[in-house]
Image 1 (cartoon, helix red, strand yellow):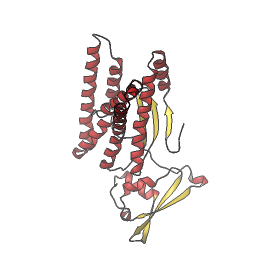
Image 2 (tube, one colour):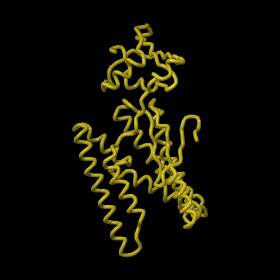
Image 3 (cartoon, one colour):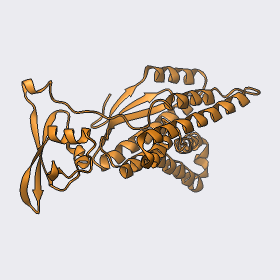
Image 4 (spheres, helix red, strand yellow):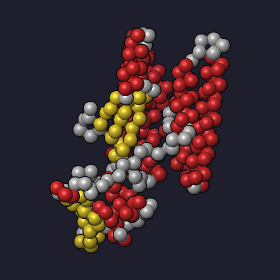
Length: 274
């Protein structure tokens, strides 16, 4: 299933979770959580698009949703904005419901579930643990100490948060067990070893050249950073950047040349230096 820009896929277990929720009388909660999760991931996608990057593959999972796409080369500051977009969207929705109750108190019984779900997604996603947005933000904050150290610290923090939630589940076993907490703890424990960046796509046209690939020519400022030019890449076209400096033509950069620089980590390198 896909819209104009975003591809949506349903995990088989998502359908199973929906069926279970219907049988247990929790279908309203399940639907509210699904809509809140979609809002969360679409906010990530819109923020990424604003900076010229793509997050356009959403998979609905039994515990929520995940999004992936191409943000290779995105500067840390912009990645922070993309990470925050999801939780902030849920926070705005929760506040909107609160305003609705103030204006029209009679709507509370019909909207309290959706409001609680939105507020929960906002708070939970700020936990400093993978694969949550808070974990990604923690990794970005620690990058100044190096990738390896940032990854190690984030993994330790994630496991600590997972252990805390597991302890909470054990405590609930003396009354009514909260199996949702157990599932959440297991998710975080798995996320500790999964990394903290959005999945990144690569672009290759080797298989298509035999039947021809349309060329896409984009005129840009010669001083643009290579990482910023990622926004112009398309999977079905071959990119050629036409460089201008003070409205004067100074040269061209092909897609292959751009990708070689990105693979070498030269995201800040000006296009005119390639």
